[in-house]
Length: 169
Image (cartoon, rainbow, N blue to C red; front, side):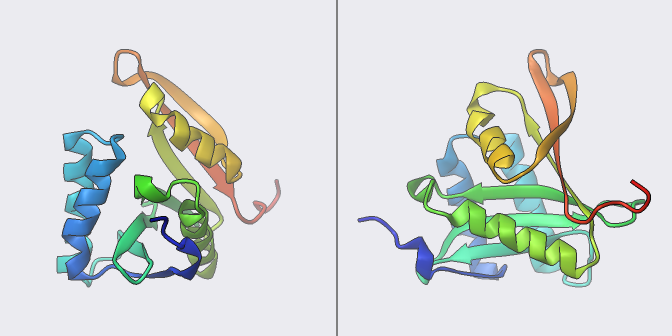
């Protein structure tokens, strides 16, 4: 039975979200065990260190639990740049607007904090084709590519979206 994503809301991370988000990450078939471990470290950081300011997680919930989430944070040493560390959507609702709503939430959050640039890093491998297409559809531009960054044949691809024109640009 299809999920009506239009009735979902975006909210802050809750402790009960950890295991469903772990399952979501595993079901995507995109992330490696190491990547899932890193994602869970950030989830745990947000859950167990509420005083930290490095990471913020938003969850898309249809009333039955998480269907997607984002993790963002200000990039250290910059003025108004934010990293989009994670955006993940349950595969059963791909193409139903969850990713778009999460990205709009990221943009709104960054603007509210006087941010001007969102950076997202991803892999060049075929399993990330849909991810790269998502970023391009959402207005991110490829800013850099580092050959063999993750491993031979797996480049780092850096995308960026400027929210406010830079002064003097």
